[in-house]
Length: 258
Image 1: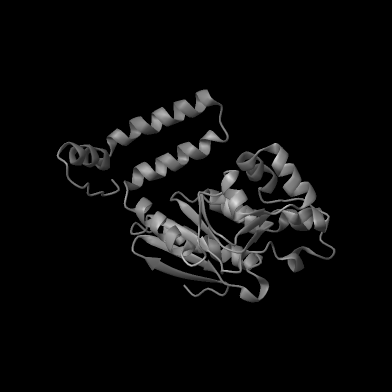
Image 2: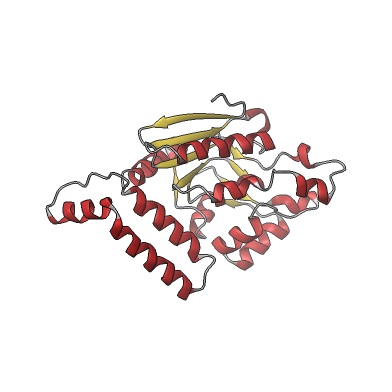
């Protein structure tokens, strides 16, 4: 499929989507979001792909949502009827792991996009922020919710209410990112992490992701019940039989995703 605002490629079992609006610092337009999610959904449906990476450029992962799209006489009904914000819900339905490889600015919608992924590998130049307050609005695609869960209420208040940016080292300190890599290797490091995950048992990866995501939304008792149900369910799979047999016989498992 031909895309206008993204680039796609495949590295072994890793699907890569690169945001490609360099003239706008990869601002997230409705077209870009639709193409991004369409590409991710295509990778998600491809049995040869085990994990995905989203990247931008070295200067900007994504500097925010496309303000030109939202400016003017937009009414609440206009925004409600627009599919733009709802695109983030599509990302939440992706079953395979998605890693954000972030360099430069990840601001506003760009920060929300990175946080909606399952993991973040940041370059040393990465900067995270939710500066919507400077536009007279607040984050609308998960910023107030995911950032608070990641860094805590007090710091989220400062970032959202006062426009504070977090640099890469601070983002790692407060648990927003998995790791910080040199600018020269951050993307390769994200690919290596994705490739390692993609080589593991596909059904177990999928169910582990489901259980971890549920931990943010469920009481502990409900989360434990879900975890146990998914654990039991995996005993109906060929991969469980293969994995345990390979462990006992000290050989490498060959996963079938069945």
